[in-house]
Length: 355
Image (cartoon, rainbow, N blue to C red; front, top):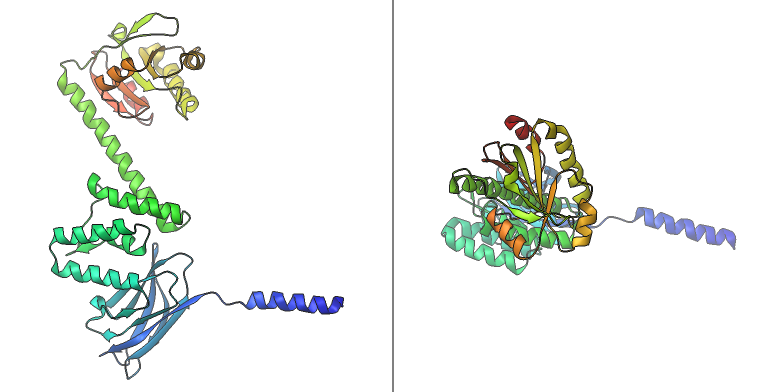
């Protein structure tokens, strides 16, 4: 009995080991291409690789087969310099029958609705105005942002130029819609991670630019750009930013409620320890709801810390056009704003210039 069970178990393992991975097939007829080689290529994020090829028969027929991708992805049929992009998800059979000259734009695709939609977009890009193409493409993206067609559409080009610009805030909403949907649906997919990171980097770059422009505007709006702040510290004493005129000042807008507050304060303390004896002062405005928590968190800080809440917070944040926390300003000895920062990367270097 034991031997029989062992044999059954071994047989089961053998069957599992021999189980074939899912595959898909692309076949059909391609006229005017007899005896030429047709390639099935995987157009992955990191490059294009040939996954199968064959000679086209005298009657134009061909058949190509390869392992199905783990995640939905893009492939293409190629003969010489002519190619047809394909979207492959759970599809097992795709049929493409056309002539060689019509290959890049053919709509004769069966078994892959996504591939047909991509072909329709390319055909539209040849005949429609830019605005019409954008309108139709926007509908496709927003109707199903997690689809391969939506991913394809956000990178669609017309006459060699992208129709969507990630740097444009309005256009970027489409990239965000696709990135968010992909991140929810398949977060480990390399296309998901790449697109998500692209969107985040663009948003960070835009925020940095806004900060620079805000600092320039602040300088332009005031002759000396020194807008005074007077708030109460933990001991109940009024502390003014103007009391440090004549010194280099870091004006810090932050909150003890920030997730990274401890690490942030550690870096701020390092700057203080390094430059205080040379004339640096720090004036921290904490945007905090809970006074007791704030007092406990800031009790041992060696620089001036004041608290702003509700009306006070709204006033000072508007006064300095603070859009996010943390935000830091650097004033020279004459009280001029010399920079606006959201991190410490270049703040230390610039402090040294004005001491």
